[in-house]
Image (cartoon, rainbow, N blue to C red):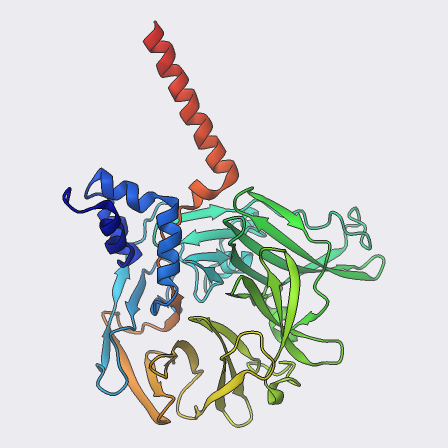
Amino acid sequence: MCDIPLGICRDILLRLPAESLLRLRAVSKCWKTIIDDPCFVKAHNKCQLSSNTLLLRNSSGPPFYPLYYFDLEGLNFTNGPKTIPVTPLNLSRIGVSLVPAVPLPACDGLMLISPLDRKKYHGRRDIKRDSEGIWEIWNPLTHERLRLPQPNTHSHVPNIRSHVPKIHSRVLGHGIGYDCAADDYKVVVIEYLYDYYNRESQMQTHVYSLKSDSWRIMIEDCPFDFLIEDWLLDLYPLHSVQGVFLNGALHFIVVTADSMSMIIAFDIVTEKYSFQLKLPDNLSQVRGQVKGQRPKLDAFGECLFLSYKWEETRHLDAWVMNDYGAEGSWIHLFTINQQNYNELRVVAYLKNKKQVLLQHYCGFLWFDVESCNYMKNVGVHGLFRDFRLCAQHFIGSLVRLHDRCGSVADKRRMRKSKGKMKMEMVDTD
C-alpha cells in the first residue's frame, strides 16, 4: 500500500461506496486521513449523486426493525433477476434505537426527522412529551443523530402577538439542503401561525444552519398555500409537505390564490423563494382535496420527477422535467393502470436505461418506458415474512454531523485545547 501514490489511492477510494470506506478507515492511518478529509468527503458526495441505491424499512413492524438496502445498477428489465438480494444496514443501538419510517427528506445521505416522525413511529405513542417539536438530522450510515435546538416560533412576527396563548401553529413544509457557497447544510421549516384572539394569520419560514447550530426567521414568507388535504391535517396536525432538494434549491408543490397548483423553489444559498415552475397542464387545476389524490414530487439523478394517481380511473401518470427550470419541459413518460395493484409508487427512475422501478405492498415492479413493455414482478430476497415495503432513494454519506455542527465542534475544540494545556503544565513541572 505504501508504494501506491496518494493521488491514485485517493481516486480509487472515491469510486467505492461509503459503507466500504467506513470499514477501510481501519486499514491504515494514511487511508483514515484520506477518508476523513473534508475535501474527500465533499468529492465523494458528488460521485455518489448518480448512484441508484434504495433504502428499505418495514412499515408495519416496530421501529426496532433493521434497515436494508440494495443497488439498482446491476439490474436490468429484460434479463434481470426475479428476486433482488438485500443487505442489512448495520445500525448502532446507541442513540438510534428507534428507526423512523421512510421516505424522509434527504440531502447527501443526511435525513431530516420531523416531530411527526418522532411522534408516530407507526403506532408508537409512548414518546415523551418533551420530544414534541424536536427536529433531528440523521446519518444512517455513520449512526449519528443530531438533535436541533428549538426554533423560536413566535418571535419577529409583527402581525401576531407572542404573548397571546391561543396561537395555533402548523408546519406546512420542511426539507434539508446543501449550501455550496457556505459549505453548510440547512434545514427549512415553513410554518403557518393563526392567532385566535386577534383573528390574524401569517406564514413564516425558519432556516437552521448546521455550521452555526442556530435558527433564523426569514423576512420573506412563502406567498402560496400548501397542497395538504384537510383530512390529513385533522389526523396529523404536524403533517407537512417534504421538500425535494435539487440544483441548490428545495422544491414544494403549492397552490396559488387562483387555485392553480405549481412548484415553488426555495434557494438554499440566498435563503429566498427564487422561482416558480408550472405543473403539466392537466395537473395545474389539481388541489388534492380528495383523499389519496395529490401529485408526488421526487428528484432522481438530476431530474425532477412528478407522478399522480387518478382516483377515478385508478391510473398512475408520470412526468420528468428534462430541461430544469424551462417552461414546457415536462415530458410525459407513461400511464399505468394499477387496478391489480394497491398503491403503486415510483421509487427509482433509471434515465440512461429508460426504466422505472415501482413499489407496491410487498415487492417491486419493473417498467420499461421506452418499449412500453408491461410490468415485471421483482421480489426481494433476504427479508422476513410479512415485510411491508417502505422504500426511498438513498446515498451513503461520510458526512460527520458532530464535526460540522458549530456548537458541538466548538466544545470539542475547547476540550482538546484544555487537554493540551494540562499536558503542557505537566511537562513543565
